Image 1: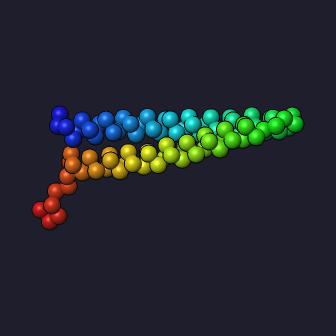
Image 2: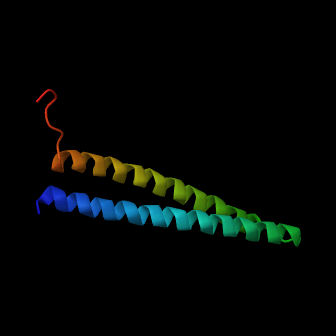
Image 3: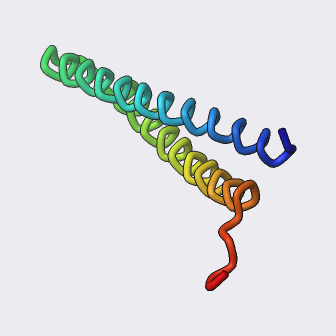
Length: 89
């Protein structure tokens, strides 16, 4: 296995992990939003809980940006590992 092939497989694994982490993160955000609504309905001070939701969302936005970088790296490595034949050849 070439070094580029190994790098490609590593990046593909990272991409799968990023997908799972992001999906689970959005589930956490939605659960936390439900908790905030429950607190609000009970007349509780929700400022800290609301801040937590915003921090979770900001974190997920950064994770999604990182995921985009992983996709770009995978695309680059795929071209390195299996370059397209010359046009007209």
